[in-house]
Image 1 (tube, rainbow, N blue to C red):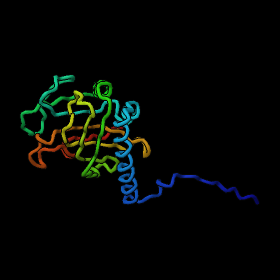
Image 2: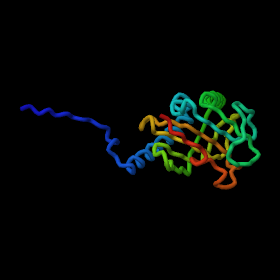
Image 3: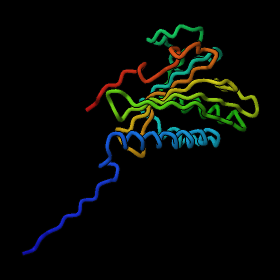
Image 4: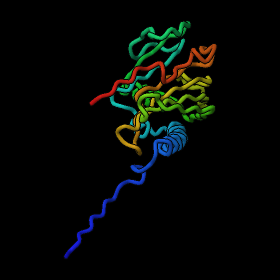
Length: 194
């Protein structure tokens, strides 16, 4: 009698509990943010672009920028005198290319990270942090030498090692009077796709 043995190789993380998976994803996000920060300083536009969803939503609040994308009034009541610029991935990457070209050296630092998992969709995470951006030659970028708050919506649904960013927001510190003025995961609707 011959007994056939079948070896099934499964990725280690497929047998993880939800809590273990959450911890691993949070560690990945921590590492990702450090690499993301370095990519800005090295002006690695291809690396940055790779992580944004094809239909990513980029929201930037500013007083001085001429609109590049469509100017809108947010549906959320964040009533302040700043323009809200909304871009897609293509517009955002084009603007970043211009920023990188006009700045000899960029120093970006990230502080105060908070990572939250979506209450309904466990593969979606919201990341909030303070961003300090200083260019060394006084370049003309909209986040130039201003502390601000960044929110990222990161999705692990299509790959544990290559999550994508669906939303990125940036708000100048001077435009945020309290926590409710910041963007969070709760400010964006998430729809399940088939």
